Amino acid sequence: MDYSKTAAAVLKGVGGEENVSSVMHCATRLRFVVKDDAKVNKAAVKAAPGVIATAEAGGQFQVVIGNEVPEVFAEIGKISKLSGPGENQKSVSSGPKGNLLNRFIAMISAIFTPLLWAMAGTGLLKAFLAASVTFSWIDNTTTTYVIMNALSDAFINFLPLALAITAAKYFKAAEFTSLAIAGAFVYPSIVALNGVPDITLFGIPVTMVSYVSSVIPIIVIVWLQSHAERFLYAKLPAAIRRFFTPMLLVLTLVPLTFLVIGPLSGLISGGLAASIGWVFAVVPWLGGAIMGGLWQVFVIFGLHWAFVPLMATEMQTSGLIYLAAPLFAAVLAQAAAVTGVWVRTKNKDLKSLSAPAALSGFLAGVTEPAIYGVNLPLERPFAFGIIGGVLGGGLISAGGIAANAFVLPSGLSLPALFSQGSIVMLILGLSVAIIVPFLLTVILGFKDPVDEAAAPIASNDVQVLSPLDGTAVPLTGVPDAVFAGGALGTGVAIIPRVGALYAPFDAVVVAAFPTGHAIGLKHANGAEVLIHVGIDTVKLAGKHFTLKVEKGQQVSAGDVLVEFDIAAITAAGYDITTPVILTNPKKYPTIGSPAAGPVAHGDSLFLAIAEEELALA
Image (cartoon, rainbow, N blue to C red; front, side, top):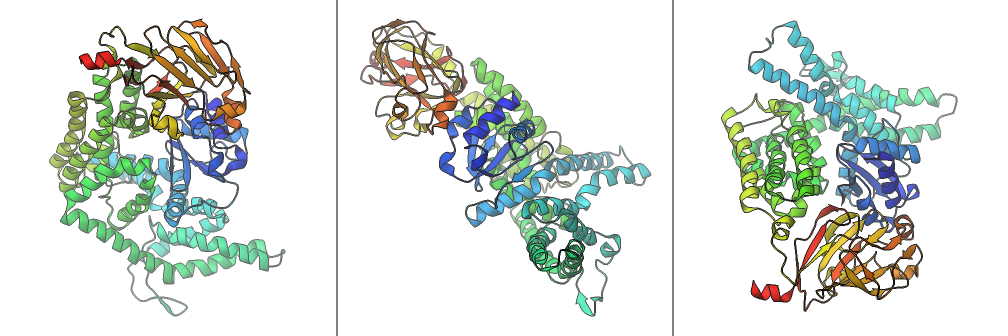
């Protein structure tokens, strides 16, 4: 991937730097909060090299990149003031818009995303350490264990310190003041007071709770700090406000936490953990089936971030995360489904895309390439993956399995599940989650373009090649009711990435609009195809288009018909999605082998099936 080109294309597609309120990235996505949704050109963003898909959730416009998203994010920082290397978030105005749920999810995402890889990495180390003790590879009475345990446990133990920094960035508070407040929460002598009776502060009784690994208190207190800071900076004299402000905040907010916020959050955390524990104790298979089946759906819509504080709460209160265990089934099931696609498909492009997507899913737990690139467009593999997640997740949770560390579900992090519950049920659940979607995909299959295209083409059928380099999408996804509804005929749309239109077969040009935005072609067999570059681009009156042919001209497959400037067209506010349509449906009422995903000009786009062949069938 050319990161600079991807960054430039994405930034331009979202309406430019001036249309962005904030941007951040998570494990696989760029997450934009835009000022004006109407200025976002989704088609242009999707057509950017390296972009897998786009999504809108949590008040954000999300651009799915995959594992290389940090590099693209860094490049955005080089061409704008929005971000830079080493950062995870940059805001240029007020917080996210939308309803309360969207704002909450955006907040959690912003605060936890920068910590994700450190939590996952140290969690994975803790999982391997626990597995080593379980299998007697390391003696937990030795100093080796003490040191290794400190390495793996320190980050989650002092989580309030890390959250203080990210929360301060989000709420625009002084980071080191937030760190001073969080430091008091985990100070050794304060930690030692947990459970001690008759604690008082200036004669006021204090119910001391544990702030080790806590989440809620520091986020709430930093939010209060941000408001108090603005008030104090406005009221205190300039000569003293820089040191009086942090002093007053530490002096007031830390006792407020010990007296009110801490005990209250302890009740909330305990209640949440008890509720989760009840579900997984009374009907564990149901909780596991729901999480295993719906987790990837939550990820698609960005709702999975709402579960991160719940998992952190579970970890703090019990040292185990029951919510996390069935997620392994959800992730591995989608990886297994895309593996089934790799085994069954005869399409070289699909096979080459499926292999790395499967590897990414199984080893790293990153399923976006599998879901957006393969399973979701093919539909059935995604459904098979959900079935595997339901069955596997239900079995895993029925076995009382829980993670002993915060890890990202993947093949590499499986040791996190070895210390709690039935290992037999874990193996059974994982096996079902992998085998079922794999076999369903291989045996029941999916609509593979090559399966139909490999059959001999009848005398009147016409193979329509891709006239563009870009991404093939269903006609129903075209943002124009006439094209999407099939009023002009059936076909496939393409989001171009190169501004050159090629002939899709040997033909006669029956329509060459002077504006260059549309071309009509007729095959010797009678198939008539209309290629309409962009939506409503006729309004450009030929601007940004260069017509290379004329009406009545004979062209061969691969000849250049039109050249156009994608960047200029999208900058003018037009969607560049290009429908390729059969316009004589009476003779060619249907198509076969429609392409999906990346295509190059000359690749098979679809097979125009003649009415006579349908009658014979």
